[in-house]
Image 1: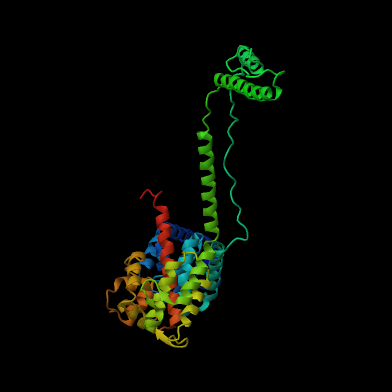
Image 2: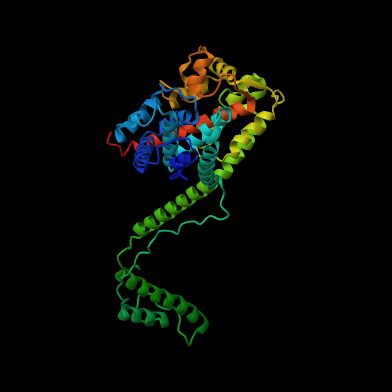
Length: 438
């Protein structure tokens, strides 16, 4: 669909270039330039999206200025074709750029998160079908990757042991050479008292055969053993050192076991993550505030649970995780599933709540200080202890009316999506730093 965004806006009569293919080509080139900017600076994804979504976006927003500058580089005389600031054209360029840049699925996370939060509160008119199809296409691709990362495989294929057997060790030894002369003399002595050996038999065989046999066996055995021992000492070979092969084998086995354990750990990470989340849901205990959620104000608990869930899951998480968050919140008896509050009230409480201090700290790390429109996390980051903007400023900053209403589960899902989006685009920036020339 990414190649058809501008065409679809043209087809719906939302923009008009007078049938001039050259003008359409300039718009297409501009969209590609903006997509390249997004890929280099993915943290701009939410800013681009929040302006692109809203037909009432302010013309003085920095994103609009950036798009105008990009269009002017490709089409210096565009102002002669359109009267005033062509907001619909600029927003179509932004959507086209967002869809192109979403080929990086981490940028896709931020785009879909912004769309899921904001679009229900914006009158899209004839644009709605285009938006819906773009969001669903990108969301399905991102969700497929998340499901794969969370899945537990049916089988785990361990790597082969990387070890090459060493050549056989050759043992060298001298042949046994027995001193037959000495052995013969000793055997003669063992046979009769008249022998010339050192150890003589004490008996004659014909006088006392029984005792003679006893002496002969003892003395003959001793003579033979001594002859063999002496020969063995002379033929003793050089000792063989096999410590090297044994060390190589032990290292290969240790590496194989470590690789296998890492593979098992990675393959079962999704299962372990689900187990941890079930434990979290059952205990209803906040690891950040170190208190039971049941002890917290209803207006605070949603945002805090969103923050705690964000801390436990990776940036790529299935859409069902937001549903899991909602069901966990609804398990609290204090939460009325039908009660709604204005988004301005919810943001004000999030700015002032002591329990949400960890959320505000993370918001300041994730979201840069913005001059124009941005996510609600930006308000949490810049408002220090007191929420002091009026409804008109809120609409301009966030892109939705201050009087828009949300249930506590909906508010929690909003904060969770923004946290996921901000972290995903931060990870893109960090991943590019090692090879960056900037």
